[in-house]
Each structure stands twice: as C-alpha cells, then as structure tokens.
Length: 214
Ligand SMILES: C[S@@+](CC[C@H](N)C(=O)[O-])C[C@H]1O[C@@H](n2cnc3c(N)ncnc32)[C@H](O)[C@@H]1O
Image (cartoon, rainbow, N blue to C red; front, side, top):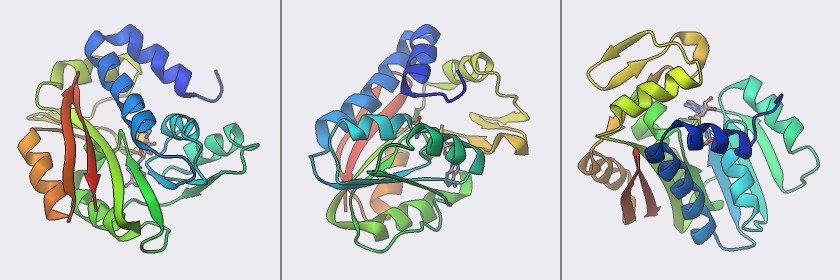
C-alpha cells in the first residue's frame, strides 16, 4: 500500500497483540465519543492521517494536521486531496503554526511518547492555540509497555540505536528519535504543570488515553 491509512495501522496492531489493539482502539473511540460536530481541530504529529480519518467522522468544521516530517505530510496531502476540511502543514509541535485561542480540540495521539525534551514546550503551545475550555485528547505508552513496544518496532521494521532504561533511541533518519513510556503520575504532573485540567486518564492496553481541558 503506497499511502498507509487508518485501516493499514489497524491491521498491523490487530495482528501484533491484544494490548496494542486495545490501545489503538481506545485512541479511536476517545476521538469518536468526545469531539462534537462543527468544531475546529488541530492534530499534532498527524503522520499519515490515521487520527485525521477518525476526526473526520465527527463532522468537524476544519482540521489542521501538523507533522515535522515533510515526507509524511506530502503523502497525507495526496490521501486527503479531495477533502476541503483538511489542511496539512509541515511544522514542529514546539512552535505551532497557529494563532492563540483558535481551536476547540487538539489531538496529540501517538506523539507524546516521542517528544523527548520537547514535552513541556509542546504542551504550552497546545495550551496557547486552544480556545478557553478547549479540549486536548492525548495518549502515551504506559509503564508496562516496554516488551510490547520492542515487538512493535521489530514488526514495523524500525531500527533501534540504543536503549537506556525504558527509553528507546532511534537513528536520526527515522524522524522520531526517541520513545518513552510513563507512569500515570508523570502524565498528571506534566499536563497539570502546562495548565490543563485532567478530565479523564485511563490505562488502556499498552498506553494511557486521556482528555484534558484548558
Ligand atoms: C507515532 S506517529 C503518530 C501518528 C498519528 N498521530 C497516529 O496516531 O497514527 C508520531 C508522528 O509525530 C511526528 N513528530 C515527531 N516529533 C514531532 C514534533 N516535534 N513536531 C511535529 N511532529 C512530530 C512524526 O513525524 C510522526 O509522524
């Protein structure tokens, strides 16, 4: 398949393990069950657009997808070329190309674990671009995910440069150069420090999936 779509990732994870499937399914269902129709959404680290595909089912007014990798943005542009609600831009999560107080929802699904030393800046940026009481939907690997993560990287053939504790480092050409996992208390303190109220944070398979409010 030339352009990996939501279906492609769902097939990979469903074959991988029950815990990965639970995590990926819960990322999908938290988007479906929380985003109201007619709203403006920013998807940070949108990749090929798996989470954009889910968000489109919620009938939004507009989705802005941001990813720092020009290759995935160019493939996503091909995939969504006929959809006028979707705009895609190359950009970094630590300096979002968006105005303050302009989005109803932010999606940070799949990326938080890859942010390394950009976690704090990214959460501050999301806080800046969300409207008052805007909602952030996020996910990250949990403290028990290590073995499953290693199996996943092998399955999708991502080379590993080194492993320090539970942190996995990838070669530079991969784009995401680090992958971390978190205890619930880490996520609570990091998201609270950035000014978010935790509305929901549940352990699901290999990760945590949460809803946060500005
Ligand atoms: C694990 S993928 C998640 C893709 C998608 N959200 C999903 O759940 O299927 C992480 C994506 O974030 C992008 N990324 C990594 N660091 C980034 C950063 N600092 N700013 C913007 N995008 C970033 C990567 O290029 C990659 O496409």
